Length: 265
Ligand code: BTN
Image (cartoon, rainbow, N blue to C red):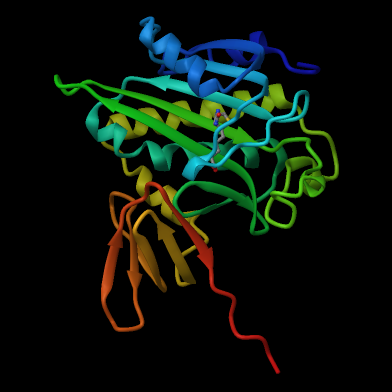
C-alpha cells in the first residue's frame, strides 16, 4: 500500500485499552471474511484486518463497496464485547471515524443515521457490523469500516453525487496511516468509555444530521415516511408519521433517504 505503514499504526496504539494488533493484506476479497476466518481460528479481540484493496467489498443492504487499491481505507476490527457494549458498537464506530477524520483534517464530520459518516451531506465512510451471539452470552463482533480517503469518487457512477472523499474535501492528499491511527485511537477511547458505562450515545447523537428531517425509511417489509423526532438510548429512530403515530425503528438493515422540501415557485 503506497504510503501506508501498518507498523506506525501499531506503534501509535501503544498504551491503548484494547490489545490492538494490526494485520495488513495487499489484496483480499473482503476484510470481513478474512476477519471471520481469523475469529474462527481464535485470534484475540483488538485484531484489525486492513487491506489495500478488496475485490469483493461488502456494503449494507447486500450492496457492494467500491474498493480500489492505493487510495482508501478498508478495515475490520474483531471484538468480543459484553452485551452492553455490543449494543453501542453501531454508535462507537461512526463516532470514532468522525473524530478521527476531524483530528486529521479539521473537517466537520456528521453522522447520518444510523452509521454513515458525511462531509457537507455527502457520504465519505460506511460501517458494516456482523455479530454472533453464543449460547453462553459471549459475543463476537466484526466491525467493518470503509473510508473514501484519496479516491476521486466523482468518477464512480454508482456513488457520484452521493459520496465524497477526504481529498476532494480538503484539496490535498490525506495520509492513510495517520488517519487509521487517529480513528483507532478514537475507537479505543469510545470503546473504553462504553465499557465503563459512559454515555457514548450522547456524543453520537450530537453529530447526527438527521434530527428534524423529513425522511423515507425503507428495509425488508418496511417503508415509512415521517419526520425524525429523536433517537432513543439504543440508537433507534423515533419517526413521527403524518397520522401522528410515533414509530420506533431500530438501526439495522434499513436505509434512510431525505424527502426534498417542495421547490420554491
Ligand atoms: C455501507 O454500506 O455503508 C457499509 C460499508 C462498509 C465497507 C467496509 S470496507 C471494510 C469492510 N469490508 C467490507 O467488505 N466491508 C466493510
